[in-house]
Length: 379
Image (tube, rainbow, N blue to C red; front, side, top):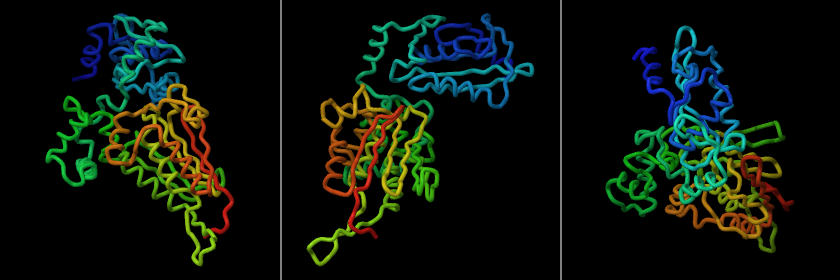
């Protein structure tokens, strides 16, 4: 199909529930994208007038990227539109497409919109509440991943998961088992299925870990972009590599050896990072190992206005951000029960007697810091 016919195909139906024309990219275009994700999805076609006549816009190699970044920065959770650029008379027609968001509503600068016929309507408080309640009993990872197919997951990893879950004995058809767990629905992958069994590199699961000698001097680092089960062991291996061994002098003839931090606490922190991360956030999880502390940062603040004080006092009802991912980690025994991770971290540090732990809500995430208590001797 040539460019002119492609433009005609996009514009011939006119504006409506899922299409809007924009002569230029502006704030109204972002509002429309917000309305689309809160309704049925749609396309904003930039470079076309209100009558559907193409005029084109002048762009360079960075223009569309800057538009997408502006959309991401002004929306919460971040909207990341797909883009298609069509050449037209030395200019361009740019199509920005979004799908209906699985967990709604999405805001733009604190306001919420929906699409009604060919216009955008700001949501009332009751409409915002209704949209939220419709998705209250579900989670993002349960929805169909329209960007990936069965070819993008590793069946070896699926079989390894099933073998561990069933102690080596399970039904012969792994796809049937994935359907049983609702990791595949209507013949398509859920987001959880892709993240759990990704066959290759994926930017969606990025973890950056480094060993720092100062706030700016990094002496070792690793970037991890694999499936979620593999990430647990890959990150733990990197952290163990940089732990020091303490020798504890006791009344016995032999010295007691232990890591300078509680390995149990570290593993619990890593599991919580991976299971409860906000994978809709474009940022990576970050681990920084210093001489006197380890900092763990994860995209995704505590949910439902939960505060650290309530978390530590156990005065809250636990809620999983990624219900399906959490369930699969429970199936393998890696995670026991929602809401007990913080207790296990605190208790493990108390038993270790060599480290303290602190928790904090950050601007767009959650941070845990393990810090050392002065020890007797070190290797």
